[in-house]
Length: 225
Image (cartoon, rainbow, N blue to C red; front, side):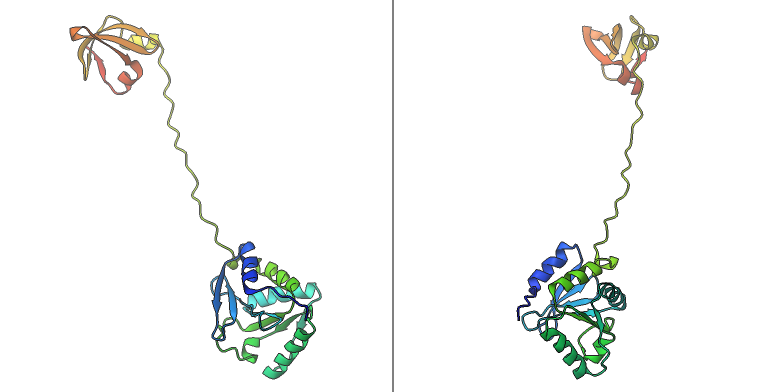
C-alpha cells in the first residue's frame, strides 16, 4: 500500500500549528490519542498498525464534520448495527485507501469501545492525509478548542493637569522685589530679584538662594513677612 499517513508526532504538530488546544495521551490498548479542548472529541492516530484515522466524536463535531464531508461529496454513513459488520465495512474502505469519510452514528456503542468517554458516542473514520486536513479545519471552527483570549483591562492613562506658568509680573504681585519673606527652611530673607520664574532671595548672614517661584507658591514654602 502506498498510502503514507502522518505519524502521531506529525499529527500533533499539525494540530498545534492550527492553534488548537490538545491533550496527548494513550488508552489501555496504547493507541495514541489527541483530545481536543477540555473533554472534547478524540482523534486516534495509530497509523503504525492501521491505515486510518478515527475520531470518537461528540454530537457537535459529528454533525459539523458530516456537513463538511457531504458538501465535499465524501460522506458515507455506515448503517450496519453489528460490530463485526461495521469492522468489515471499515476494513473494506481501508484496503482500497478510500477517499471517503465514514460516519457511524452511536459507533461507540456498536464497536463496544468501553474505555471511550460516553459523551463521545459517534465514530468517524477516514483514510487519507487530505481528509485529515479537512477534518482539522472543520474542528478549528469549534470555539471550545481554541485558547481563550486573555482579558485585557483598558489602560487608563492618568493625565495630570498642567499648571499654567506664572509670568514675572504675576510673581511680583505676590513677592515684590525688596519685600521681606520667611522661608520654612532658610528663615528670614529679602527678595532681591524676580526673573524668568525664579526668585533670588538673600537670607540672613548674606546667604543667597535662587528659588523656583512656582514651587514656593505651590508648596507654601515662602511667605511675605
